[in-house]
Amino acid sequence: MGLRINDVVPNFTAETDQGEISFHDWIGDSWAILFSHPKDFTPVCTTEFSAVAQLNDEWAKRGCKVIGVSVDGVEDHKKWKSDIETYGNAAAGFPIIADEGLAVSKAFDMLPAEAYLPDGRTPADSATVRSVFIIGPDKQLKLSMTYPMTVGRNFAEILRALDGLQMSSKGVATPANWVPGEDVIIPPAVSNEDAKAKFGEFETIFPYLRKTKAPE
Image 1: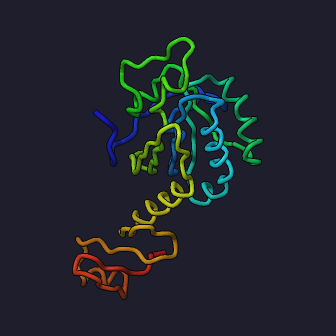
Image 2 (image 1 turned 30 degrees about the vertical axis):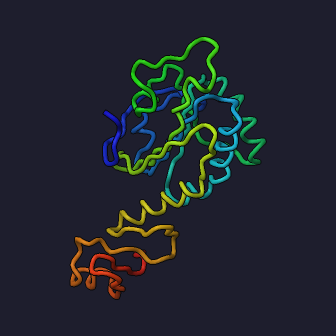
Image 3 (image 1 turned 90 degrees about the vertical axis):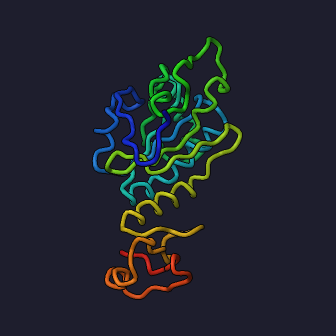
């Protein structure tokens, strides 16, 4: 059974380049993003880890912790971080999970239960370990997306999606291409009377599509 939105994400204990963590304890009361990679020292993944490092201040501003997963060991992670920081010209202060046994990849349904890493493996052997999971303080999965190895992830979009999730936790929804500062959608389940009391003025485009200013 795959991991679905609003499921509580698996808890696990794992080694990282910064020591052992217990995942739910590590999340604490924060939002969290877990992003996975099929192998260290690969070109697309290096650019992605660098992009995450460059957004350090943005993650912190949103109360969101980030953590990487790669199916290599701790010592490889430590060496790879030098390349990541050189490429991105930013400190990669987030931990990277060493998922050599594939326990995390399997728990998050990125690999089948029978998967294993053969001798002389290439990234193709773990190609599906290319996912992003946004997790709420309640430890529930809020959003997931998976990319092929050849397409670098757009972390500006991941940041925008996090903004949308944090905004929607205030009882609203966000329209297509929404960015902070733009109007939001009042859910259809909220009556006009309740919408007026809660949000004040709002625009009715269709009976089921009403927009209002984003709540603080």
